[in-house]
Image (tube, rainbow, N blue to C red; front, side, top):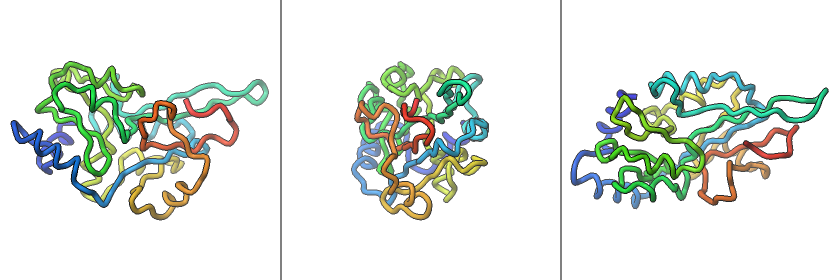
Length: 221
């Protein structure tokens, strides 16, 4: 995680001191050729935890803390009972409750759609953590309880790579792409009418979308 934080600072996305507010506002206003989003096909997910391991290795989060997790629930009755797996993480919401909840303005949304946290401004109050309706944020006790979460592997995106969870998913259940210029399989999935989001009724505009399992009609976890 420390390497990721250093990279973000060096790349100019997060800055130190009084200019942070002005820089954050310019990033919010600036148009971007990318708006990153992820689609997760629950028909492909086997619950193998490869994405969790890949994320853990990439983010170096603390013990017991994860930027991505897999929820499981039993569906159906014997003899057709089965486990349904749902990978979950920060949804990079269009209207993120965590941004409004942060009293220091440390959490903000980049023009490319990714929600980030400036650790130089974070006051470790945890307001953003409790405001997230998806349980996607946590405080890291190794770093003065600064708030952390998934950022779509922003450092990897900056050098043309996909998020680690996407690259290392053996069943290709995660499909990543640019909403402003969808291509390939990502574009094909966007045309599927059954895409949905977690807690869609909250209208936060999640940018992690799901193709529900064909075997289950109850929706995602």
